[in-house]
Image (cartoon, rainbow, N blue to C red; front, side, top):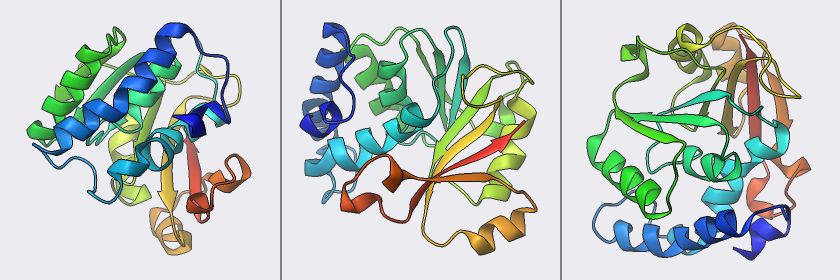
Length: 208
């Protein structure tokens, strides 16, 4: 938890309680359903929560914005972002139902009112449009954009970015970007957070 407060300090008491509750909730669930690597659970706040909040550090979503988290897995980046932006609506989608059971339980336990959980593939979402799609290490960029683009409306619902896809990726991305045919903007997470684990991790943005 301290690593979160090292970079962010403008939280309400409710937000602080919500962030603080995540360790016990995920530790408990991880013993039943492996949603987080066993070796990572003790580093939950740095490797999962803070990493997710790199998006919040880069993009200040406007009140009333609608965000879809494609392939949310155990709820990252969606759950930390939903805590951070209580006036933004989040749809957390994944094709693996047992992981979503964990996500729904965590959201309920901490009282997140701005989260909807849906067992679906992104390409099957037909009834809603969003300002942004977010994702973390789900698929190659070209594939991710193919899923995200039809879900996005045009507009500018962040102070820094026009509507689009914002995803967290790592490693050498040159080949992946070339294959996608896209020219995304990249921001190294290491420019935001100084922890060594964020070297070679990036925020990748594709505008709608």
